[in-house]
Length: 204
Image (tube, rainbow, N blue to C red; front, top):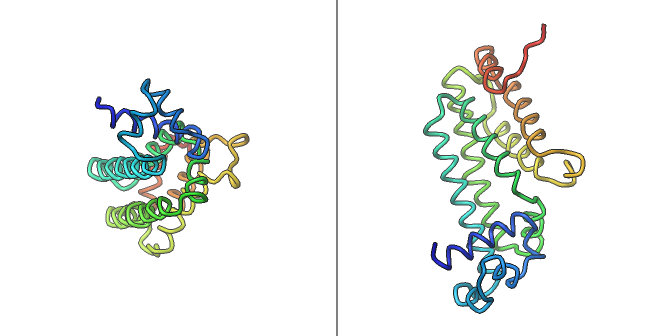
């Protein structure tokens, strides 16, 4: 791995774990096992590292969602796979990073918001269309309203005010809100698949 890639990988890991404000260029250099001078040879300042790190993270998420859309057997399978991906990502993700970027790095935050609109919201809408065409989601769904509601659910799961980490586990929150969401939009045919994918035990 070349030095630049190594620096970016380490920086993104530290940002995801501790947030961006408390991580210094010295911290990044130390974890890379190189001098701070070497880090500065590849990145002029921490802001450039934040920008490129967030861009890499966004591109990774986009590729993962696209792969899921292509390989999923149906809309519910796609939605559950995305939930598991987000949950897996969240295990090594400190929500304070997004809070600090929003507060202290507005230009970078604008890029994240653009990703949320152009990728996340679009992907949710396309999943709803797919589920309706497959007979798994109800036909009377208002796509714009339901897609935005789902996006708000995902945003809330990362919100420390709504689900503080000392009281809620991210995987549990994500599974609960996703199960509630799918069961609310699914047809009878869809419910059978939901129970299968989420291993929900039907009431006697």
